[in-house]
Length: 364
Image (tube, rainbow, N blue to C red; front, side):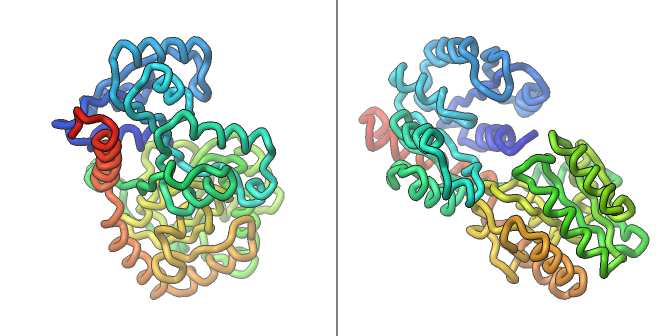
C-alpha cells in the first residue's frame, strides 16, 4: 500500500463519525477494498479500467456516482478529475491534496511550459489544495504560480496504535546483530525518484573502508534489475541483501540499526515517520517536507540529494558514533508525538468546517 492509499484510509478512519459520512472511491476492487471493508469503511468502485490514470469510462462512472450520492465534499487524492467533476455538479467543497511536488529541484528549475500550465490551471477547479508540508506550499507558489490563499498545509500523521498491533502480531520482529555488523536498511520502489543508484555508490565508498556493515534493500520496481546489476558490477553482493516485496515491514525495520534514504524528491514519506517512531536513527536527503519536520544533527542526519559522497560521509559518521545514533533516535521518537493520524484528520476537518461555515449559511 502506497502513501496515497494509506492517507485516504487513515483520514476516513479518523474523521469524526458524528460529522462525516465518508466514502472511499477506488478504481477497481482489490487488496485496498479488503482493508476498507476490514476497517468498516464505505467504498465506491467506479471501474476505471486502469489503476494509474483516469480513463474516460472511469470518469463517466465517477461522475454518475458523485451525482447519485450528492456529496458535500470531494477530497481528491490522485489527480484533479474528481474536482472537475465536483465543480460541474456544484459540489460545495472540492479539494485536491498534493502528496508531494514530484519533480527534483533541477527539474523544477527547468519545468516545461506544458507541465507548468497543467499544474497552474488546476487551481481553477479546486476551492483549495492541501500541501503536506510548508516546503511543498512554497514550491507550488514559486514554480507553478499557485495563489498562496489556495494552499493549506496539513502534515501527514502516523497511526501508532496500528503499528503497535503489527509489531505484537509479528513475533519475529526482534533486533538482530547480523553477526556483529551494523545493519543499515532502506525501503522504497526501485525508480528514478528513490535514487538507489546513488545509494549503491555510497555503499561502495563505505565498504571500501569499513567492512562491518550490512545493507538491506526492501522493495521492488521498474529499475530493480538495473540496480541489482550495478551491485553485481561493483562486487557488493556480500554487503547488500535484496529483500523484495514484503508485508513484514516492521520485522525488518526492527532489525535496522540505521535507516537511510537517498530520494531526489518526495513529500513527507510515511516510512520516515515509522522509523522515527521505532527509534531508528535516520539519514535522509533534504527533499520535500523532510526538513520541515527533521533537523540536521538534532533528530536525523540530512544530506543534499544526488550525492554518494555526502551520503557515505553521513553513514560513516553514524556508524562510528553510537552516542549520536542514540541521541538522534531518542529525539525523533519524542518528535513523532506531534505527527499523529488523529491530529492530521482533526486539522483536515477544521479546514472543511471553516470553508463550509464561511461559504454556506446552512453550516453556521
